[in-house]
Structure formats: C-alpha cells, structure tokens
Image 1 (cartoon, one colour):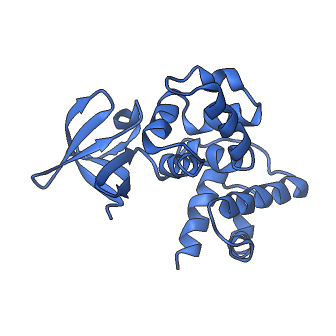
Image 2 (image 1 turned 180 degrees about the vertical axis):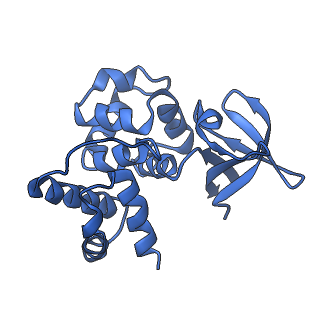
Image 3 (image 1 turned 90 degrees about the horizontal axis):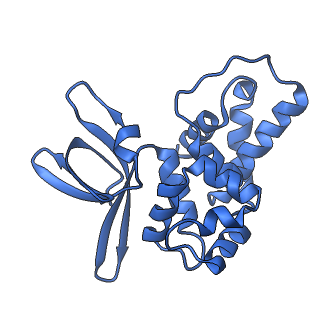
Length: 207
C-alpha cells in the first residue's frame, strides 16, 4: 500500500494530478485545492498523503494535503453507500472543518448543494457522521495555526480530553487505547490545539 508520496506535480487536470517520484508518475485523484495547500520543499517537491483503494480490478490512489484531510476522507467512505469519488466531491465543496460544522448544525441544504449528493445521501451523512464531528473538525483545522489565549479552566481541559478520546474511538480505537493516549498527553491539553493533540495521540498509539 502507498501511504505518502513526495515528488513534483507534473500534471493537473480536473481533480486528477500526476506526481513524478524519481521518474515514476503516480496518478492521484484529489479534492480541489489540494496542491495549493500541500507542503512543498525548496526544490518544488510536494508531499501528499495517500489513500490506496483496492477493490476487485480497481486500484486507485487518492491524495490529500494533510493527514487530517485523509482521516476526513476515510471517515466519509465509512458511511454506507458513500464511495471514494463521492467523498472527494464532498471534500472539494466542503473542507473537513466546514463539513463538520455542517453536520453539527444539520445543514441539509448545504450538503444537497454538492454535486452528486441527493437528499437521501445527505440525510445519511447527517445521521452517520453526527458522532464523528470532532474527527472532521480536528482533521480540517490548519496545521501549524497558532492562537494567543489565556489558559483554559479545568472544565475546558476535561472537555479537550473528552473530545480527543471521542475522536480516537470514532477512528476505530478501543476506549482503553483512547484513554491511554489522553492520559499520556494530559500535560499538553491546556496549550495544544486539538488537531496537534490528535496527531500526537496517533503517534502514541502506533508504538
């Protein structure tokens, strides 16, 4: 399986790009705006996080600017009757954080305005993603964004830990594993943004 690629984007065409990695061109389907948001180095090489989709005679690569975007994509394709191309269409119209907000507010009209999303599919998204809003919002927050604010009160810390634990459970981890990660990161709950906490928690659980 391919999890990440770093190379030069040599072709962009209506949601499909080609990334040249040491002379090999990989074709990836990406949400709109992915290349512009992805991290690039001084030599013009772009890093993309990849979801490898294999089914029967289908082998497709889907690329994302951040790990959070890929998590949001995998959350979407976990919804019944929502395939990879539909998930890409959703993320092209609504970045992960905006999608999470739309789900939380039950904005059916915003979902049905997306090309290819009918009322039944929109209703299914609202139903099956209502408990996964923290995952979407964490995945969609800007990596490296910083804010200046006073330290939150103890109740806010508890809320951050709860959100982190809920996000991990929604991603498929057991409650005991989520609790262990939250406990190890307890000292960082006061000052670290939830998206960064989620990344650190995943690193903890991968050991």
